[in-house]
Every structure is written in C-alpha cells, then in structure tokens.
Length: 139
Image 1 (cartoon, rainbow, N blue to C red):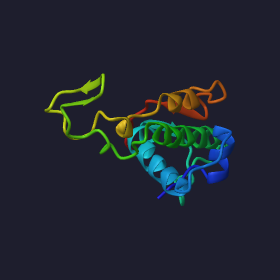
Image 2 (cartoon, helix red, strand yellow):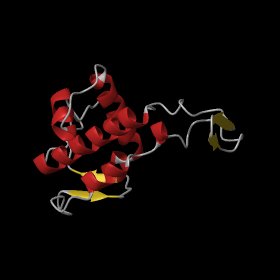
Image 3 (cartoon, rainbow, N blue to C red):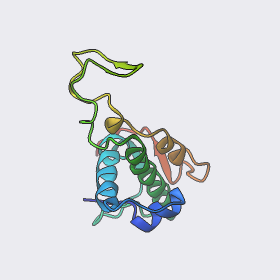
C-alpha cells in the first residue's frame, strides 16, 4: 500500500503535534484518496512503487493526505461509522437529524474528501505537464 505522508510531514502541515495513531491515519487517508481521488488523476508514477515521480506532484499528494488525515482528527470520524445508523439525536437543546434510510455512513465526514484536499491538488505549481485532475483513461 502506498502511503504519501509521514508523521513529520503531518506535523509540519498542521503546525502541531500528531496524534499517537498518526501512522495509521495517514495510511488510511492515503488509501482513501487513492480510491476516491488520485486514481482519477493523470501523473507520472514509479512503476515499482506507484508513487509520483515528480517532486511537485509528490509534495501535493503529501499535503492532500495530511489534509485528509487532519479532517479525520478534527471531525473525529475516519471510517464513516461515527454517524451511521441514527435518524435523530437530541442532547439538551441541540437536535441533529438525518434520514433513517441513510444508515451506511457513506455521507458522514469519515467518507468525505476533505475540502483542503482540493486546495492541495489545485496548486498553480501543478501544471498540466505534471498533473491533471479528473482524467479517466485505460491503456
């Protein structure tokens, strides 16, 4: 499995201390973005590792994975299970609700691409000769 960021890079990205389980969070974020974002992008990759060969693209992937991991830390939900299965919840004066047919957790924060991932992948340094987002092709 490809992991695009290290604990040190996460701390540099967030300007803070990484949680104790950051290696797992970065691995999970890398896998999630591979499946939901990176596979729909064009970039040059190493044949053996699948990692981007261009340093600018690699740095953007690192920022994107750090952003996704930070999103999980901030929302408290990295798998999508955190908000699965409830129709409404009331705590004091606060009431949260959603359709009772939405029990998979697919719409929970843990299954969403963090907004800052898009910021990382829309960097002006990612010129079309290095990276194109939203390309689907088969060889």
